[in-house]
Length: 409
View 1 (cartoon, rainbow, N blue to C red):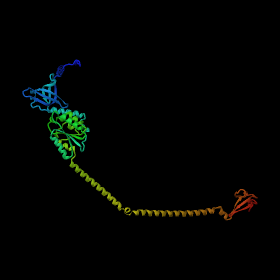
View 2 (cartoon, rainbow, N blue to C red; view 1 turned 90 degrees about the vertical axis):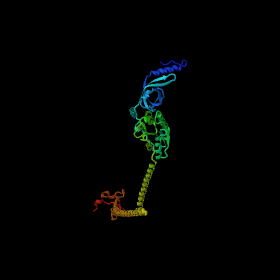
View 3 (cartoon, rainbow, N blue to C red; view 1 turned 180 degrees about the horizontal axis):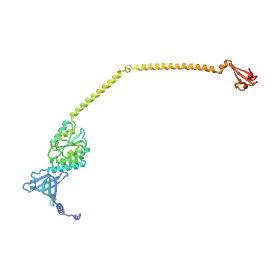
């Protein structure tokens, strides 16, 4: 039942502490897994104090365990070890402190660790965290390289020295963090997010030397893998050696087999680029020289042609053709005019021969009635007394009909 309290009727601290102790005691014993961040054994005491931390979240618990449980492990319990404890939570009202009293303690074996990593790998792959389609291409020549590595580590020297050997002007922004132990995940994730927000950083390198599965366990942590996948800046994973395969290798945009190999992915080799430029410049020079020679040969060929050697010759030839064409036109026109004139004379002669005037010239006359000018063709058209007009070659003569023309013999 909840406490009935108010500003006017508060309860003392001891009441709340005692209730908390009672409620927590009801939880009973539970199995808890965590990473050992601290192990304290005082001489002459039968109890050891452990601090267990959740690597996926920044949370920890204090656990008390009998010393004989630690001795039963057969090997000293080191910080960073993954263990499972069976413990009962208890709340100390006097100090307001939560602790867990362990009655069983078991180390997580390498086989169990690998099985859990394999299951985590399957889950993340199903979510698309390792999908090649989401991986980003590395810049050809980064402005600044973000480097996450251990403090004073050989991995840092390998990356920096080999990168500068390839490209002396490369710049690094280094974040030295814990790459092993209980704080490794938190520090690496914070460094990743900080460098990812830095606009001058074009690529981020995670570098660490080789080690056992337990040593590299932080780089298979789910929180770190998701942080690498969430980066907008390309990430190069250079963890351990070729045979090591932490899960961040699958989430990173590029996996380098070693920190030394990471330098090859980061920057181009200056010597190779210069050699490539020399080769490209030589090819370009040869191509330009060949093109110029080809065009010069074409120009020489054009200049050697007769029309280019004597430009006026073409004009003269065209002028001669024009003159000949004009002369042919003139001859043709004269010929046609002569023929037309002859045809006209012949036609005039034929017309003149058929003309009534020519007939009149031969002594014939055209008889017309004087009254209406009608041509008289038969005798009955001009009875006696009809006044007539005779049209001759050189004029007209008046006449009068005497008797019908039919009586004439």
